[in-house]
Amino acid sequence: MKTLFEKSKKGRKGYNLPSLDVPRVEPKEVVSDKYLREELNLPDLSELDVIRHFTKLSQKNYAVDTTMVPLGSCTMKYNPRINEELASMEEFTNVHPLTPQEFIQGTLRIAYELKELLKELGGFAEVCLQPAAGAHGEFLGLLLIMAYHRDRGNTNKKKILIPDSAHGTNPASAAICGFEVITVKSDEKGELDWKDFMSKLDDETAALMITNPNTLGIFERNIKEIARELHDRDALLYMDGANFNAVVGIARPGDWGVDVMHFNLHKTFSTPHGGGGPGSGPVGVSEKLKPYLPVPQVEYDGKRYYLNWKNPKSVGRLLAFHGHFGVWVRALAYILSYGREIKEVARFAVLNARYLKHLLKGVLHDPYPTSPCMHEFVLSASNLLKYRVSAMDVAKRLLDYGFYAPTVYFPLVVKEALMIEPTETENPETLKAFASAIRRIVREAKENPKLLKEAPHRTPVARIKEAEANRKPVLRFEK
Ligand SMILES: *Cc1c(COP(=O)(O)O)cnc(C)c1O
Image 1 (cartoon, rainbow, N blue to C red):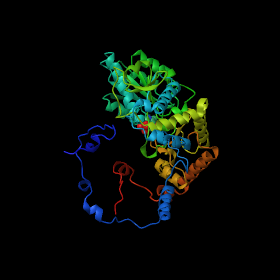
Image 2 (spheres, rainbow, N blue to C red):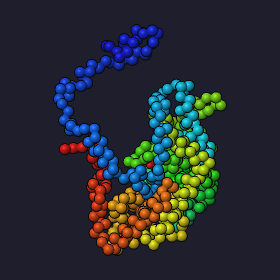
Image 3 (cartoon, rainbow, N blue to C red):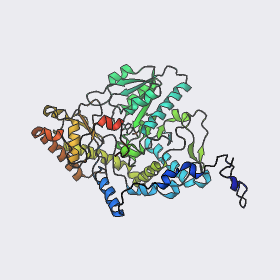
Image 4 (cartoon, rainbow, N blue to C red):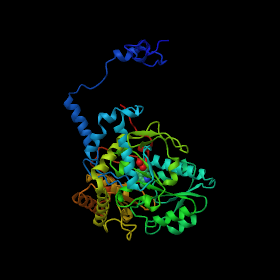
């Protein structure tokens, strides 16, 4: 059998390429004659026509480059262009993950410095950069919690407590790891219901998974007491860090008693993540969970950066390689460009959300009127149901006014929920324009509800079957 490297094996001037026993494939076996002879049936267009076609297509899109995307929980802030330039540098994009470490010291340094900054910002003993997204970080966090209890001989730790306002990935991750999910109620202030929490916390509780600020945009003021109660029963505190942009640079979850938290780099520290990716969900841990972290970890010995494979109790690795490096570059660039001023991100995210909530006072129903919001807030369109107008109709009509819609019907604890997150990158004029669009829509609901039921009127397609579009997407052009 011929091998691919047969010729080279004989050696050209000392090159000694490895002999791979790969069978040689002749081109004609791969490309059939039919395709070589048949002409492709493509339209005959000039470059200009093609450019116009694709530019017009892109203009039909709603994107943060053209409009505010107030998708609560998703944190669709503006992504500085410098991040893209740095992440696409050939020095990074051409590195193979198996390149010897001495040739990629700069690349390893990026990972190391990002890890160190996340440790500092989160108040953690160690950070693992591997997880590919927030939900993947939740999965790792739960594996670590499992390893911790197993190591201590806690055989009865089978329950994970999760508030009813949690993001769907929280119970899903707990279930995937084989835990029993116990739901804890929210109280009338939108915080974890203390009584319900205490009645469900027992010796079988492995951990509580909490989001802070939670998905209602409300800060869990009892977080330290919650941590204490859990630790008293040798249970752990998991924090979903998707809303970290509300506190970054101001408070550190590690100081609240959080044992493990995932960061959503693509949300808090900017990376374009519409359409489901790319993401990165590094996990920060307290001393207790450090022994179980995945390998390899990037380390620095004072002279060189290297990958450390030693961690005898490690839960193993999460990915074939090291993680989503491009997102790490963007996150590091973002953090370094703010420097000590990173707290401005949180301050402006909260200020913008509070200002917008103020502008919408009395327009839509506020389910938690006594709780000040953090970086996002949830209003209810239930006051429009009497006109047979729903949260979905409001969201669709917003598209006609040039705004992307907020998150709707989440969190589940609020009826007809509209979850609005302006982010720190919007200016007051845009917030005012958004609020006046909502005001007009509410007026239309009273005067002409049909207009809303049939909205949007200015998009290429109007109403689609949401569930079907999600479950059976048509990804190929068919004649
Ligand atoms: C976005 C989000 C997640 C999941 O993160 P991904 O990066 O999308 O996997 C989990 N929890 C909350 C509160 C979120 O907003």
